[in-house]
Image (cartoon, rainbow, N blue to C red):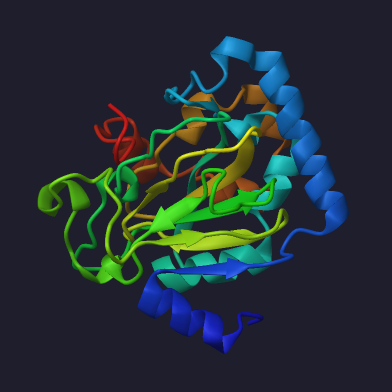
Length: 259
């Protein structure tokens, strides 16, 4: 176990922890270049495998699109943190990117991912945010309400306006190369970008094994991609899991806020 004890405490109590310098400079450069290439290549269709969002560009189904994405989701140091939230039985739920447009004044409503609430077994969604740019207070950083994962409530059910600034919310900022591990039952959303530049992150989203995937990986990964995957990746993607096929083929809610 390489997880720092203070990080465990923060993740348990606040619902998130930021890991500065998690990405080595060379890896960050490779990842940024691959994401830039895909945004240019896919153009207006970017993100169409999942959902497109006004004010941002999205990429989806990234496991299918480059080796570096398969490297990142299998990073064992990262998975240690994910297992602290979800327990030992985990799978990738989706792998997406989000780039917020310059001068986009809208905020995402506070939400939990997949509108998830903890159940009798505990937490079942955990997201990780990989900063490809510096996140500043003004360029659309992550906003969240620390400790709200303990509430057992969805913000849309108890807040008059989930888009409004919450009195307890914080902005999660950091330098490019930082990774944020988020208990995705924590109320969170993207803030407004008031700058002249876009800001980009990749989101590796994990779920407990007995819950559906946000993007059913088996349906979206090309056969040639699936054939080339290692046993560890096949397991993480739940490609040979009949229960996952049943759960993920009929999931109704794939986002906590996008219709």
